[in-house]
Image (cartoon, rainbow, N blue to C red; front, side):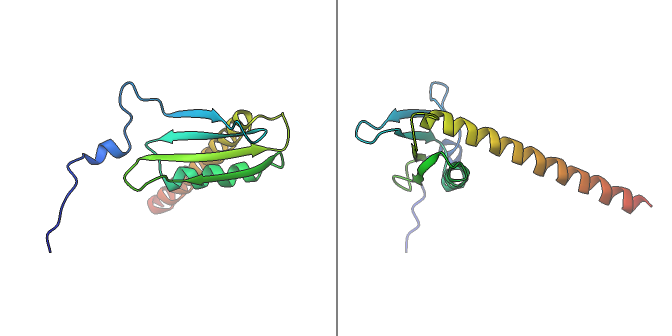
Length: 123
């Protein structure tokens, strides 16, 4: 069979255009304390990370994500909080800050292990 390759560059799937925003937010008009974040040029990796981190917050009633279509490089993250505070935006900010701290800890631990390994190799 014939193989048809996409004419789109691989970079287009994850690099933002100059005028493209990384994310946007739309408040849900039907459900209280809820909204949807559209995160451009991201996939299941970030969507699932954010969903899991949001669900760790007892003030978050619902968090889920979806990829609208495999050829669309955007992720929709839906959030509903238990009350007016935090708002979905505040809950998302807290989730991102917590993930940044976790990644910094992982990075620090990894670098320490690499240094320890390199030192052991020299001995």
